[in-house]
Image (cartoon, rainbow, N blue to C red):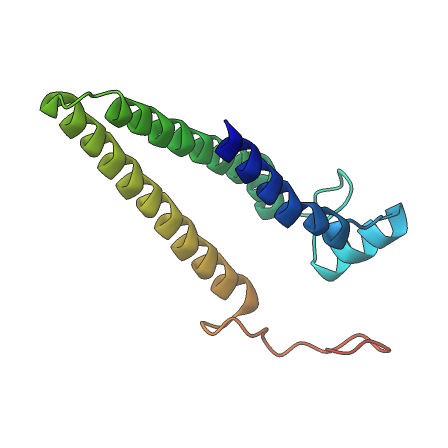
Length: 141
């Protein structure tokens, strides 16, 4: 019990300063400026179908798949820890872990390829640099 208390104290002593370092206040103007700089829309005015699909379809689906990955990892870990030397249960846990990691890798790779492809198509080049377009007056491009 004493080791647990010491570990909890050391953990709190390590992580407590991080909360103050990372804390900041963002007013509406700052949030809008940040979203504008990142080229995201802060309102419900979706400019094109790609933005709509990205924000309202792909992000929730990826979030659910990430949650499913986490649940499978926890389930396999609990299954392995409670196997009590039963080789069938250990092998089942290993198979679940392997399938979850392979599935997550395929999903992340598919997202990366799709994102790179759409980015290249929207900018007009494979390298991701924007196609030659005039810069609006008064702005740095």
